[in-house]
Amino acid sequence: MNKNVLVIGLGLIGGSIALAIKKEHPDIKIYGFDTNTEIPLLAKTLKVIDEVVLKLEDVIHICDFIFIAVPVKQTIDMIHELSSYPLKKDVIVTDVGSTKQQIVQIADSTFENLGVSFVGGHPMAGSHKSGVVAAKEHLFENAFYIFTPHNEKPSSKFAVEQLKVLLNGTKANFVIMTPEEHDRVAGVISHFPHIVAASLVHQAQKYDKENDLVRPLAAGGFRDITRIASSNPSMWRDILIQNQSVLLDLFEKWIDEMEKIRNFVANGKADYIYDYFMDAKNFRDGLPTRTKGAIPSFYDLYVDIPDYPGIVSEITGLLAQERISITNIRIIETREEIYGVLRISFQSDEDRQKAKICIESKTSYDTYNG
Image (cartoon, rainbow, N blue to C red):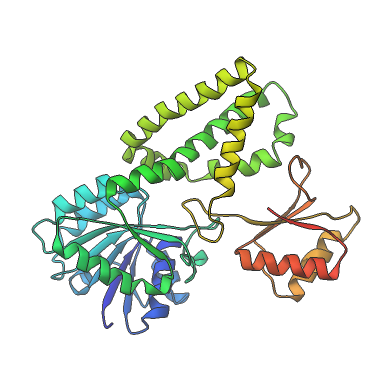
């Protein structure tokens, strides 16, 4: 595949897309552009891209594929900007945004008479790190990569197939959805949970003013279940505005859900409360564990260790001998529902399993998957 690819926005997602393409198609030339002109220079040094682009008009006319890998609000601005350039005939343009309806509608109307095939895209994978330095060619492996093409255009099906070939190196699971279906599903399993997490943190913040123990006690499980509240505020502001209608509907359903469980508690309906939690447990326990979802997973290993000097160094030393990389490590003080004192985070489930075998075979400490 002797083509030219332009990646606009060289962060974690854009950089990882570039690396995955380069791995599978070494003959493709990848151009990189970012509003921060220092980032493409760094990306080229890291061999993420082949050529630095300082002005879009310098290369836009030779590009066969264009990836817009910037936040959703900036994606709309970029669509308008691209339409002002002499784009190559039959160029395929796609994005990576977390919302699709508004972006696809604007792209369709903007590119309508320009011979451009626009396919909405959303790779449902991420990391707890950001920036081009964190980019990985395998970031999307086993993740869902959603395409939301314009179903009424014959050229859309061809464009999707071309993108699948181009992105084959991601080893992602490609899924076709309408923009409306995407935004509804993303609202349920990603957008609204971020709202809930933020609201729980706000509630804890209010109680923190009344009781000094709230903050230290929240350092355990509470901190873990609300971790997505630490996401980029600007990004989530834009996502919530873009997916407004879906989220407003979900607010109503959530209020009804809270009212239902509230009535169970108020009326002391023990059997109903039990069934409520059992139904939730059964559904959650049945969720896939080998694929990546919309919210990045933690691959945590909990280790029961005694409290004596050098114990953490002992564990990390054993992992270093086996060349197992860790992303985070900390002592857990609040351990309700958590079996273990030391929590070690890994980049993948494979690394976690290697670490579990390593620790259990070389020490007497018990380990538990998070």
